[in-house]
Image (cartoon, rainbow, N blue to C red; front, side):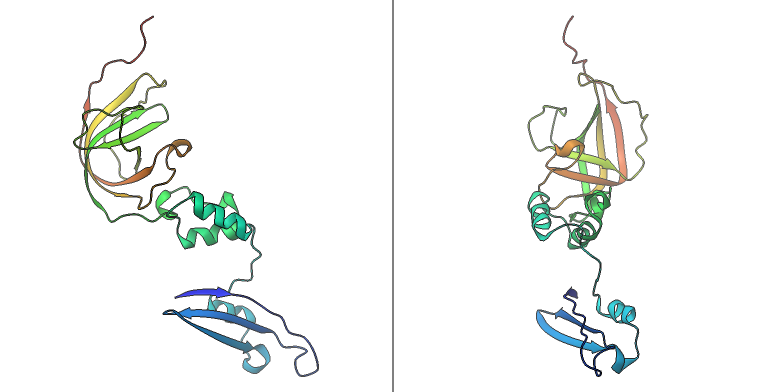
Amino acid sequence: MRTSAEGRLSTGNFATKNALSWHCAISVKGHNVRVSWQKFLFGITFPSLLALTGCDLRKPVLSEGQIQKIRQNLPGITDTCVQTLRYGGLESMPDATEQCFEMMPQKRWQGLWARGFELSRFCPSPASACSYDTPGSQIWLTQRATIPISKDIPGDTYSIRLFKIEFLGRRTRERGAYGHMGGSRHEIIVDKILSVSEIEVPDRRPPK
């Protein structure tokens, strides 16, 4: 059930002087129902009513215009995450992609994984090469499962470590801006490693 709310405090004559009136438009299976409660009629605390109806009295940090830009620039962002940003600002955005973006169901993946300076690119099978500039979809690979390799990562853009990898994982549903500086069109979360082995690659440094 999704709820949208607009609040109104009523004061007036003796009959309504101490009354708090709260109206919530609740959408249930596509039908809008407007319900009104009065604190003095029910003896239920105002916070309890808010909890029961899903109404939110917090003051938004971001404007509706900013929210629309976020939806446009971040395809696939979930409504829950949008609400987090609405009231907490951009700094409240979760670090984990799967906490904010729609993900496809888990499936088996295999291909090549390139690790390097600001690089964690996955090139699905039947790719025969994978690096910074390899043609094809830019997919950022994020580890949630432990990958049994040494963590040494080259410190320049000329050297990479390349792995043949098979795993279970989930990919973002919508194309967007993922990974380092938003340079990848998709992100895959590695849930379970099935196999991984390193492949030797030639040094890409230019001759001195």
